[in-house]
Image (cartoon, rainbow, N blue to C red):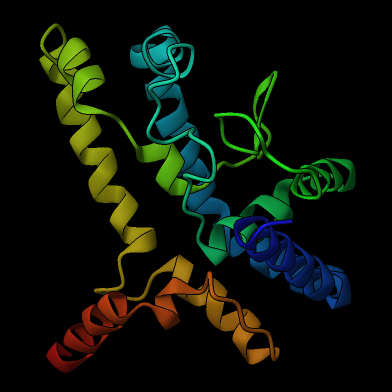
Length: 204
């Protein structure tokens, strides 16, 4: 297991361990916290399927040019793991953890199986990555789609960019308060994101 796999596996184990200690009502509170985010993700997924459906598969993944589904190329936030585990069955989590136990000798992301991404709610960086070529191909023909995409990217910041109270920060804090720590807690570890939080707090 390389460092990337180890970091991912330890995070999954950490989240799983803590969620197993929570009561049903405590888990329900977490699920309530992520409900609006899940609605946003459903809207984003529907947009991408409608406008980018076969373009990314043909032009990027099948040609091995992908910058987002490449081997050990994805970035995951700690909150990504929490959200995914809250909506996944035990066997789906087992499958994710099992692939991390195997060496990844191919060109593609370890989580990319025959049926696509193995995450039930894929990491936000993966969901919102769209190369310039794909955007040009779609948006030149459908200018209105570009406006929708810009709006979706702005909405993403409401959950991930700490210039205000946000979901990803709150989920990390829930686990920090319970005594857990992970290098994937970027909202509490990244110098750049911490500066954004500090500037935001100084304005309030």
